[in-house]
Length: 171
Image (cartoon, rainbow, N blue to C red; front, side, top):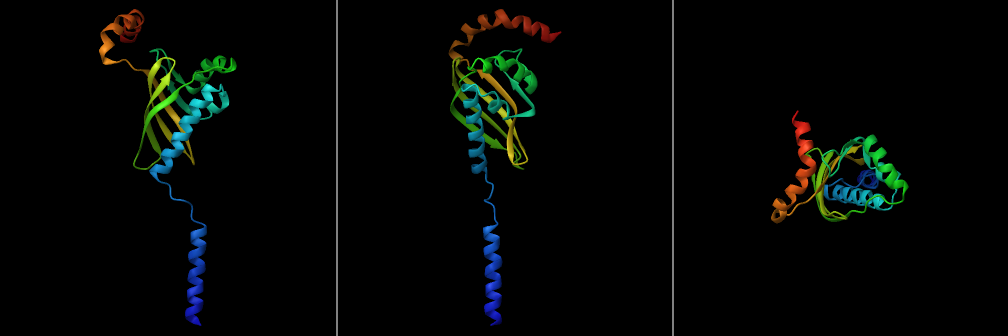
């Protein structure tokens, strides 16, 4: 009888522990969550969903655009982007490829992605931080890609605009 009581007690404890166990957090689970967040972020822009888009950026987040002068904190970026969202048309970026990496403690992730955009292929890269149980975009950089074969052709076009930026930043 004592053995039966002991067995039932252990079985109840084991079942209770099993029922109350949350699924293990793994890098693969977190990659799925981050992929969904970034995909939803891009879709929110395409659908001009201002709240859906900016809710995914951390309050102290930054967005770096393709122009050398585009370095915005969240508030400034939201002000810049609001008229585009209000018109019902922001931007529509489709992910072609994405890589996600994690810090050892699993609370920071960084990624790079290739995007199909109206500017042709662009590269996005960023850093996310886990705030509680939710990932937030802390830093995002959008860059136009330039094929190596056409760099010499592109440089004069860039120089026309960027020589003054370079001179100003060197001062």
